[in-house]
Picture (cartoon, rainbow, N blue to C red):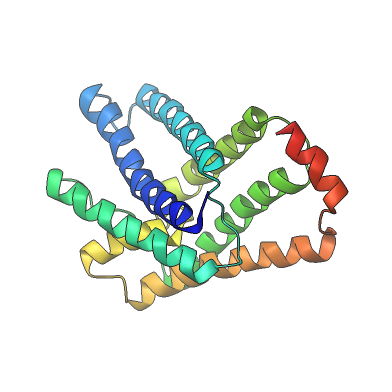
Length: 222
């Protein structure tokens, strides 16, 4: 797949990712009519969220879109554009829709929360992709459940309401006119980016890069 195709795929997937979260909420709480305080509704929402993560993992594998750091800034820019376009589209179709994740704590607490959650999320993702053998299904299952657990049991209590993805949060912040505020930049960008870079540094120091001989069996198994 050429460079332009990958960029377009990244943009489209970013657009779809924002829409997916909104559609799950509409389906569970609107179409199916579950209350936000209903345990059954929460379980149904978790099931649809996991299904969504599997779909995006498959699409990411199919389009060869990755979170590599060779062109980190350019990749982030593309995903931010996709996020902003998605939020604008959502608000146009559903004017009554929520305003996305917001900070409900101090800046320091929010940045620490986003940083820790991003660190563990990226750590799990990188670990599964580099050092743990297994099928695509099993790796995606572990990653999805881990991300959902972190989101529900920590972010769900209302500290940041974020999704450990600064590009995705950017779309909602832009719609509110808060994308250049100190709170947004320090919590959702600095906290998440620093945590991601820390994970990359950790793996480069602790684990040796895979050799070509190790990469070949890995590629065949996938």
